[in-house]
Amino acid sequence: MKNANNTNNTKLILLHPYILKQGNSNRLWLLAFVSFFTVAFLLTLIYTRDSSSSSSTASSTTISAAVVPAAAALPATVINTLLHYASRSNDTFKMSYGELKPIADVLRKCSPPCNLLVFGLTHETLLWKALNHNGRTVFIDENRYYAAYYEQQHPEIDAYDVQYTTKTSEMRELIMAARVQVKNECRPVQNLLFSECKLGLNDLPNHVYEVDWDVILVDGPRGDWADAPGRIQPIFTAGVLARSKKGGNAKTHVFVHDFRRGLERVCGDEFLCKENLVEASDLLGHYVVERMDENSFHFCRSQNSTTAS
Image (tube, rainbow, N blue to C red):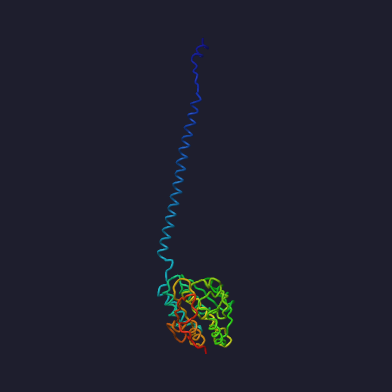
């Protein structure tokens, strides 16, 4: 009987498999729920950081553009300061304030970007580069070693060397030869890169002939003795470049330094023309040369512009 009672009081507990399955399902749902919110939080954080970074960059760019305009001109006080110190140098071959000022005034009024071509690496080289702020400035010099040295010392300077083939003692013959060839190789409107005119410089970098130069300064090469190359070629070249412009301003300001010497004055009047001379002193001639039609065959309105003597 004892055994029978024990048997009757025994309770059998059965665990149905569905109950176990339901527990695992709840855990999976909990894990999925947590994972979803974790991913959503991370995405929100990343998006917020990117948006903040973009807004910050845009704001800083806007502020920078407002503070430093892309084509801002130099203030007049800066220009006057540069001219003051450049003219007070002890360099024997420096320009005076009276010579620097007309060139600086033209560069200041020239709408940036202004294209400036300078023949000669001189005491004022860094000054011209600074005054032509945001513009294009190219220097041409006869000394290849000095041009290379200058570029090494001042990487911002764009300088090229050229070989001059004339002599100051040949001025009369060269001018007469140019007059004979004025309708052929020595035309006032042409691409000098392909010219055989003896007065034209045709070995400069190709892009020099493609630029519409607004200002050209002839302050080289040397020309104060008979066998010196003189400035016949750069003056002739300046006259052709000014008349052969394809675009930009129709007028080009051409300055010739050391105007008191006979060669600079004679060649200036021959190829830049007396009627284009707007200002002159003992040391500086200022011409304003206009673009010409490609069928033009005279540098000046008067065929007898200058008698080479």
